[in-house]
Image (cartoon, rainbow, N blue to C red; front, side, top):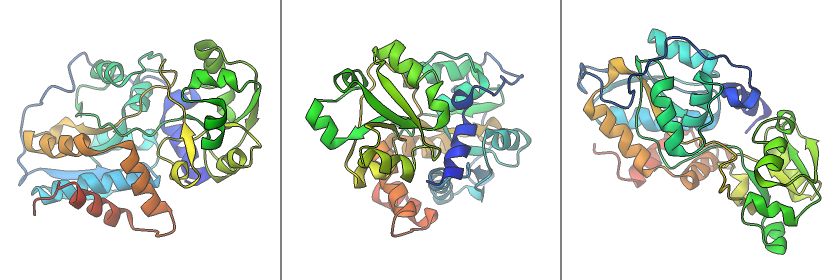
Length: 312
């Protein structure tokens, strides 16, 4: 993923920069509770949006193609930008469905949120998002920051989880500039896992090629790389487990304006969430961003077909 795309991802989540303010209009109603059904597949006009990075466009195409197959009237508006663009678009109806990430969505609305696990994050979202919005079931697929080492380093020192980095101390960690101050970055590494003998190296491509190269070349021994990066597979890298939930869950989740809700729509999107895994997102990104340069729509179509999610 490009530096620009990574920058957009950082801007998309308030937790990354700690600069977004909580929006008004929140409600204590349960956004996972079924809204009043006013649309059937034949009558609902669905406009699917996406953030402006390839993974989000792939996910948007998965939603759009599956809903079209189910008989909905679907159009798309992809590559819109960060949440400062997509949330207003969801509010005014320019779009009415987005593939979202539950952790960053929560922190957008509540910058003081302390939820970290998938269940806790989703429960917190129920009271954080505005009452005219709805979330559906989260997928197992997550795209989030991760502490990553080479497989060779993991094997040599017996590293399986973040706490095991104590066996590697002292070491150098490479990550985006903000990582040195983020709660789940260098401060959290010390406070949560007791790992403190760390030299921080700022690399401004947000887990991209420069960060990966630094890790593979041993210029840094640990790096912050997103969990759906194809480089995890191609470069034989190891994502360290996070048993203490230092890094909040970032499960892919459908986020919609309640005006389009129907049981049929929920069934289609929840079926996608039930199938989608992190490993599949890595493979989808590799198709689109790797050497084959597959179009996001084609990659989405292939995945839906393989998973048996298209009926027509």
